[in-house]
Length: 185
Image 1 (spheres, rainbow, N blue to C red):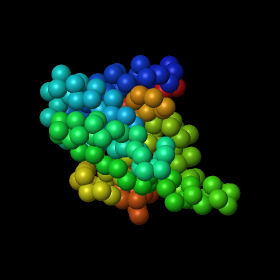
Image 2: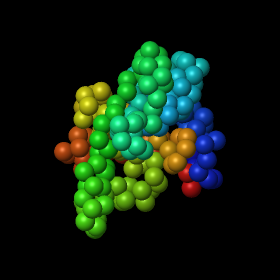
Image 3: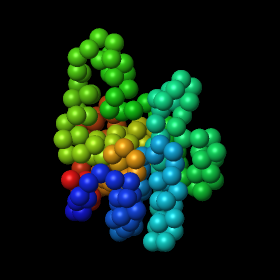
Image 4: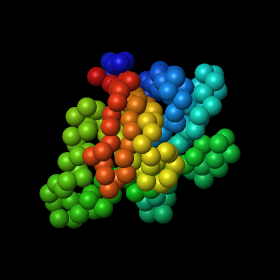
C-alpha cells in the first residue's frame, strides 16, 4: 500500500496509475468520484497509456449540492465524458442524503452519518470509495458481487484507491473492502 505524506492534488496521477494498474490486473471496472470532471479526463489519458480497456464509471455530486438546480459537473464536460465512453452516475449520496437533511434541521447524528464517520477514520477517500461503489451498484452500472477499483479524494484531486465489492445501499454492511491500494497519511 502506498501512503502519501499529505493530502494534495499532486497525488492524483500516482493514485490513478496505481488504481488503473490494479484494475487491469484484476480485469475489473473502475469507479471514481468527480466534481468537475478533471480527474476523469486524467484517468482516461492514463488508462490509454496503460492500455486499460475496462469500464470507467464517474460518480458526480448531486444536483443542488452547490446551488439549487446546478451540478458541479458542467454540461460541456458531461457531454465530453459521455462521448469518451465514460458512464456517469449522478444520484443521491448513499452515505448522507436524506439523513443530512434531518440532522441539519433537527440536530443529532443518525445511523448513516455514523457509518460515514466510521469510514472517515480510515480516511475521507475510503468513505467516498464505499459510497460511489454503492451508488454505482444501486444505479445498475456495475456487476453485483464483483470487485471494482474505487478511486476518490480529499478535497481536490484523487488520493485514495481501494478494491471493494460494493453492496446495495439497502445492504451496505455486505460491502467488502479487499485491498487499500493508497491513501494519504
